[in-house]
Amino acid sequence: MKQQNKYPARHFIMIPFEDENFLTSYEDLCSKLKSENPENFNPELLQKASKLHISCLIFDLKEDPIKVNKVCEIMKELQDEIKNLSEGGITYKFGGYGVFDSYQKARVIYSKMEEDSSYTKMEKIIDLIIKKLIKEGIIDENNLNDLHVVKTGSNEDPFYKIEMHLTLLNTTFLNKVLKKQKKKPIKNFDATKINECISGEKLADCPLKKIDFCVLREDKNTGKYEVVESFDLA
Image 1 (cartoon, one colour):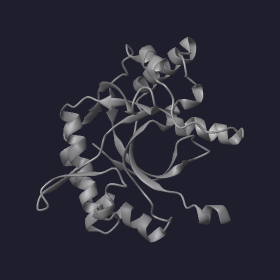
Image 2 (tube, one colour):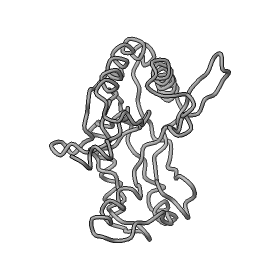
Image 3 (spheres, rainbow, N blue to C red):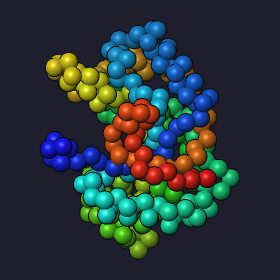
Image 4 (spheres, rainbow, N blue to C red):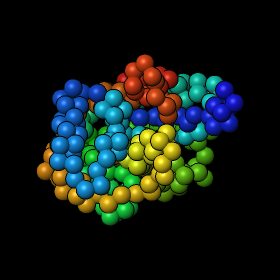
């Protein structure tokens, strides 16, 4: 308990990937990597299929129940607007792979979302949520850089954007295992050969159905992130 109080869990708003066809295509990608075992690949780099998601916003609520409840109320208030923006549904379509930093010093390998009409709808929904969270004092506009949010447009008519990405491999996942093994963590890895291995593999389309407000820790019963409350996306 003392450790939990010292390091309170962070919360985030995210969109889970739960379509069976998509998950099968991801498992096929994982199997290919494990089978071919390209240079610098470690299976512990892989995201669990049960946790695949696009993060909209990560923030530190200090596990304050008043703030947590306020975020739930805000998301409920936005439901009608979100459904209007997602009219016709939202579907993730594969837009290729990418890395943070460079392939020679990668921390994360992610899947891009094709910049189509669904992508535009997602951008508008994320902007709507961020605007409301700022207005209600849940996040501070002065801290947007720390939250990986970019403000575009004018001060009178701002538009808030994030870099939408679906994390597939991450040094953070491997480092958790290395820590338990009392081994030195890695800062990055050369992902050149890994990228060559997966470059021809296309992930399946994935209908996106809901937005989850979660705690950034695993629910041991489900293997997924701990959900505070779910809201309809479409």
